Amino acid sequence: MDRVIYLIILPLLTAFSLALLKLYFRRYLNLIIIISSTVHLILACLVVNQAIKKPIVYSVGAWNSLVGINLVIDPFAAFFLLAIITLSYFVTLYSIKYITKNKVKYNLLTSLLLSGAIGMIITGDLFNLYVFFEIISITSYALTAFTKEKESFEASFKYLVLGSVAGVFILLAIILTYRSTGTLNLAQAAIEFKEVAPKLKLIILCFYIIGFASKFALVPLHSWLVDAYTKATVTFNALSSGIVIKSSLYALIRILYILFGVEFIVGIGLKEILIYWGTITFMVAHLLAYQQKSLKRLLGYSSIANMGYIIIAFALGSEGGIIAGSYHLINHIIIKGALFLAIGIFIYNIRSDKITDLKGLGFDLPYSSFIFTLASLAIVGLPPFNAFISKWLIIEGLLETKYLIPAFLILIGSLLSLTYYLKVIKKIYSKSNIERTLFKEPLILKLPTLILGIFSLLLTLLPNLASSFLEKLPQFLIYRSNYINLLLRR
Image (cartoon, rainbow, N blue to C red; front, side, top):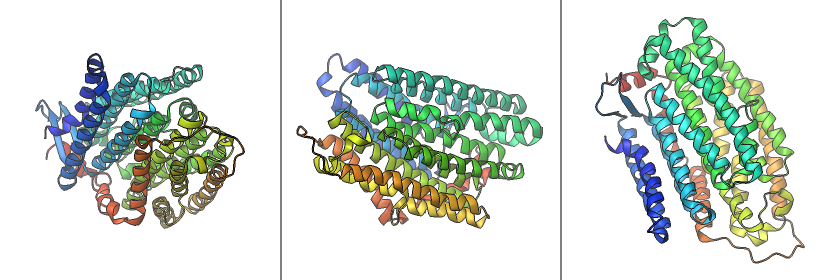
């Protein structure tokens, strides 16, 4: 299906077209961005709809699947694709108004970022996985430093150093995988991997985990994320939370389930390690979030905490765990996107993300404050919001497998997150004696934020919208032979 390759190519064509068209059609740049993003979203919906009915394998150049570039979209990949492309669409609309300087450069970088993420999700070989991983990394460093302030350059450099180290670990893991199996095709490597010596398997496993866990910021590999969030634009914050760290999580999950298999993961005790690592991550992140005076830093630590929840769910190695982790993942992408876009409207008006400066914004900026409040309560996991359901599914999976302490600590972590979000909400709706200029909530900023908030409510009010999709996700992970046969066209 040729349209699969266009998922990667279309954002690139748009980006480079903007660089050329700005010379002669500057007044139409925003229109071009809107049209191309809309076409890309429609294309994604068509591909995802097809992939749900029948998984897609596309070989670039019609090469043999063992030696060519294969793009694979099974239900799990389709789920991720729809989530990140939808988020990217609304962030792109928002950025039309929010990004006022170097707009073409910004859209070039975000388009590269999106193409890299899509490629990383649908590629069927480890070499191209690494290529797309580096595309995401390089564009992320540039977007962190986009404001060209001293602090943003420092945050970007820190991100670059830690990201480069992570990249080295991933590259070493891929090299060792190739040396031990003779192939970079993920499906064929999974077949050959059965003959690899157990000690070498453990080394390769550790390299993959360290590399990818550094990119999705499990404690103590998290230090880059909060600094990057603080100094970058809120539009990149939303993309980083929803796309950058989620793509690395996706890659690790795919490798663990397909290359190593559930039996190996459980047999060596990795299940327990990841569950308790995720528990430590969310507890540490919540405690640090409570101490923050910057709203961006608070949301950064909140993202780290939620990655802890998600890795716990996938570590369970069960159908229920995959469904719970995927459901919490989509909730986090949507809700955190709404939160970042809401605080973007705050910053657009007051030029600050300090919590003390938010006093009275509930009256000055009623729409964005209301969306922030709803999204805050949703991300905490209060009933009846959708994150309550996904967290409860994770707790249920832990209780079924006798992990009582992590299950109990998820409840404690949720209470901690409630305290620091309520602290912010209280500040927003407290009266201020400061005289302010006329505040604005432009429609182009308000509308994407509102729609993401509505999506969150729809998942709350109509859980069947997600459940029928989620039930199909474990088929190509736990039962890895399905993915192997699909990729090798058996």
